[in-house]
Amino acid sequence: MDKSLKGPSRPAQIGVSLAMLGVLIVIGYVILSPTPSTTAVPTNIQKSMYATQKNKVASDLGVKYCKAHSSIVMTKVDSLIAQGYPMFQGRGSYSEDQCSHIMGNLYDVDQNSDHLQAVIDGRLVIGMDWRLLLFSWGAPNDANVTTSVVGQTAQWVYGDPLAKANYVYVNNGIVSSVQQ
Image 1 (spheres, helix red, strand yellow):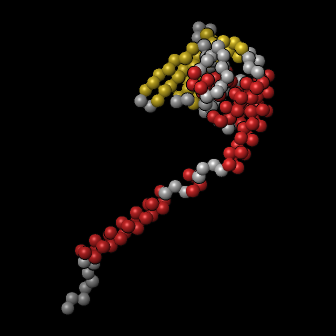
Image 2 (cartoon, rainbow, N blue to C red):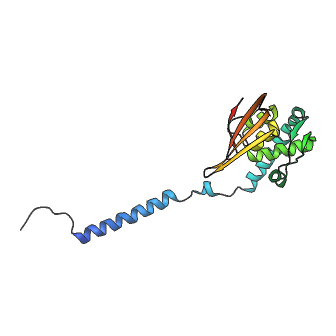
Image 3 (cartoon, rainbow, N blue to C red):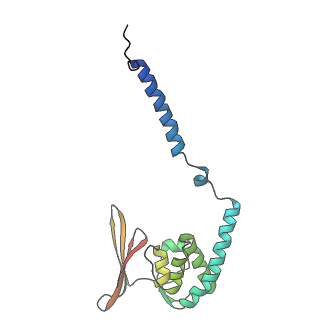
């Protein structure tokens, strides 16, 4: 009788392999399954808190925005009009209600307080949304758009390129760089 140890027989190896596969599938399911916190729908309390915060920001920053941008060059953007933004063509100003509405809409886009303050101050911040840029600096004098497989890049030109202009680059809707 042979007393040497042998590995499990082929059928036993297959059984162990299938059992391990089952364990891996269960582990993978548990790891990859969404957790309740990532898929939870906001509660009415969360929605109410957000609306309260948005209204406060819109009211507080709207007044400041109107004072800082009493005269701004704007253009009508159909997609923004469809989203409820008040728009006009050329140089003009907004009422305080319109300014509050603008700041509320911008808060929906970006809750970053530094970005919202930059809009009021007439500054741009790398990483801000194009809508914040538009309401911060107004409409550009010219825009050059390139569309490729990786998305859309726009060059917004502020000022006269023959004299002195600022070039703002917007990649897929986000301010990515500025050349002064």
